[in-house]
Amino acid sequence: MNAAILAGWSLAALLFAAALLAPLGGGLRRGAHLAGAAMMVAGAVTLYSHDVMALPQICAALIAGSAIGLALGRGMPRSALPSLMSGLIGQAGLAAVFIGGAALRDPHAFGLLDDATDRLRIEGAAAIGAAVACGAMACAGGAAVLWRGAAGRWHPLAAAAMLPATGGLVAAFIATPDLGRLLACVGAAWLAGWTVVKWALSWGTGPALALVGGFAGWSLAASAFLMENMPMAVAGGLAGAAGSLFGARLCGGAGRKGLADAGRRP
Image (cartoon, rainbow, N blue to C red):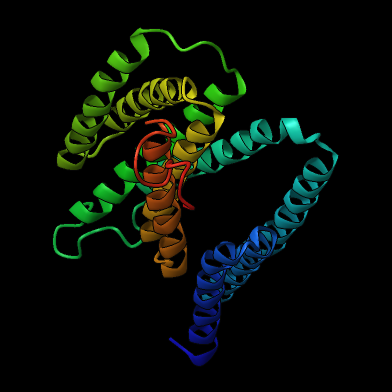
């Protein structure tokens, strides 16, 4: 690792830490700006540290996506922002699904093959399974928020069934990686994400968005291991842990202790 890459990763980590501390003083907008700057630095270091074949196309996509996101964010009414956020977060989960599929299709390009046996390493299969499962859950959760409706009584039961099923299918994929089992993981994870977020919507949009963000964060962290990008893994892990815990606490209502306690500052 050369000095420029180390300095860039260190700067991104400091900006992420500052973004986490900014809301404690009431600076929510400042924290959002710091987090955005941290992601920009991490993205720039990633492009600099990898041998990228399609750099002009990637830069063009980044500029176009940023412009569209800025236009949507400024033009949307405040009441529609939760739906916009859910759609954008869901797209991040969908991207993780595609990254996992690309890693399974060409594991050599991702450095996931065992040198002795020329087979997919178990940690590589675990990262692919986690990225695809969490990404599909984030995508389905974002869709559930967009097409919100009354949560049925069967949603908690279906979530309780599909979450273990998703974990079992991911374990089966890790044991024997193949495309069929990966697609089964995607299907089970989609149903799990849809039912969990539908159930969370009965408590409000905030808990549902927090869970969707948590799913997307975990998928980002797993994708980072596939691409050997540690700042991305740190950012994804922070988002995954914060979103999952925050959503779980909020689903208990304001009368419970912890983050959802209305009598204390979170």
